Length: 114
Image 1 (cartoon, rainbow, N blue to C red):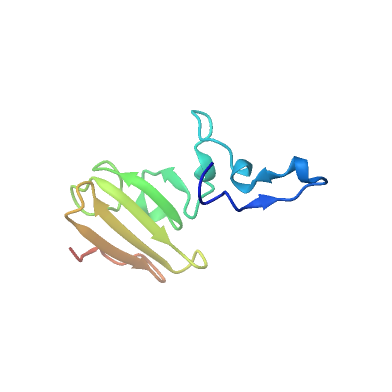
Image 2: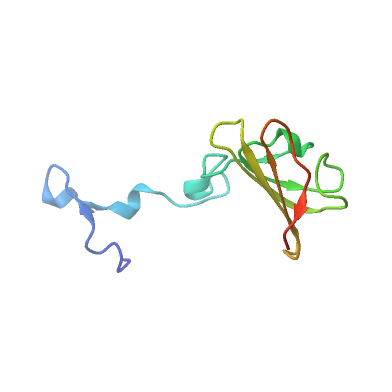
């Protein structure tokens, strides 16, 4: 028994039917990857061909993707509170470069920060 869960039980109809809270989560398997299964996490993950179409989420990007920094392979993260104002962060695959841009009445150009 996990030391973190040893004191956490959820009472049922009788004391003999108590179970640990951790049992509610289930085990990750090939068809189910735990609490982050599918695209239901904090940010949905997806495949894209044009960075201008990513408003919320993260995606793997490569040289064939449109509207990314030139010759870029890596990841794109996008945040938007309202699907109108967007901030995108592009990080290359080895983490040595990072670019930022925003969309507020149109996409701005990429600016390298690292």
